[in-house]
Amino acid sequence: MMFDAELIRRTVLELGFPPGSALVHAGAALTLHGLSPSAGDIDIAVNEIGWQHALSLGTPAPALLDDRIEPRPGVEVFNGWLGEPVSGLFARAVERSGVLVASPADILEFKRKLNREKDQEHIRILESFLQ
Image (cartoon, rainbow, N blue to C red; front, side, top):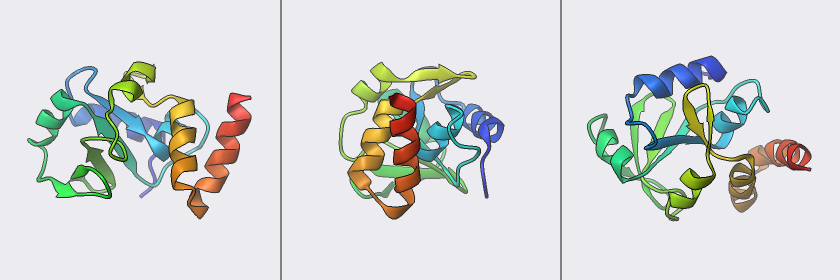
């Protein structure tokens, strides 16, 4: 399934996170910033308040470095971001259509850290956007 900006926004809002407790990251964040037409999934980082809400949406399972909950197909909620605290992500996040979104610089850092083949185009787009 592909998620355009409106579907991302609607899906995140329907999950009912308390304000300021969840932010969209990775490819879906690129879409909300208008840098990509769609994303294959929605990655959401949450703070402690957001994680408490996420526990009402599903059962946690281990991810690469954090725990995750998949409340709907194609949506993953993480209680951290690559093992790092999320406080800095939230401090730099911006709001797009009522949804908190990771900053382009934070998305670029994440994409560079993983540096997967599928990240290469996003890295180019973000580097160009940030120059």
